[in-house]
Length: 250
Image (tube, rainbow, N blue to C red; front, side):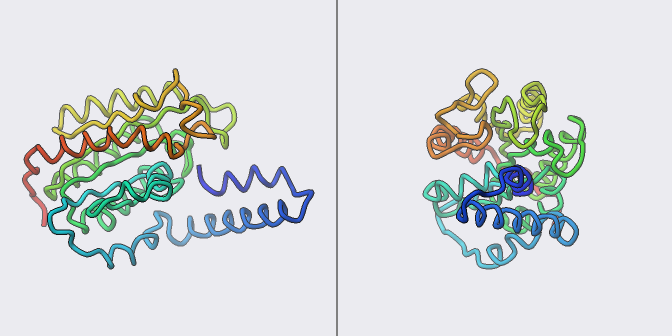
């Protein structure tokens, strides 16, 4: 899911042509940048600092922040028209739930949204920042949701999208853990008054991502995001219809 894994795979396909060699060199540069950032800006706080500072009010439009990993980042990159006034994409490729928790105040709370959608967990399963148990992933998601509620922000908990394999982690069994996490997300949303956005339901073919909804078995394409959009719209409407949590933090 990270550029590191892409670069590692590309390293095995060293170019026979100048064009491919250039692409491989570019990916290796990305890998070096990612590795350096893990030591200097682990949660990538710098990624959205300028964009956050430049935000302006959108009167008449509730503010919705989408925090997540490459699936959220890809939504903004591939279908920017979905991000109408007030909708703010704060996805970062390759991120795990602990990284999102570190930047949650800067990239969510400080933006004072009406609603936050949290879509996270794919990279936890992939051990992108080290091995994590299901319980550890649940704990960091709970912490983000609790922070949101403490600041009067309504919460949408997004399902982990379907994937029966990760190309960058050959042999890793993914579907059972995704199923466990999604069952927990649905239950936790019901218990805490959050809204559950079931993207898995509209994207899956068995345990896999539908072939026409993505090319690598994990990341949606434009058609995949088109299938997700009505789920998001319904979740946003449902979340906004609920009273805002009583803020207990300032």
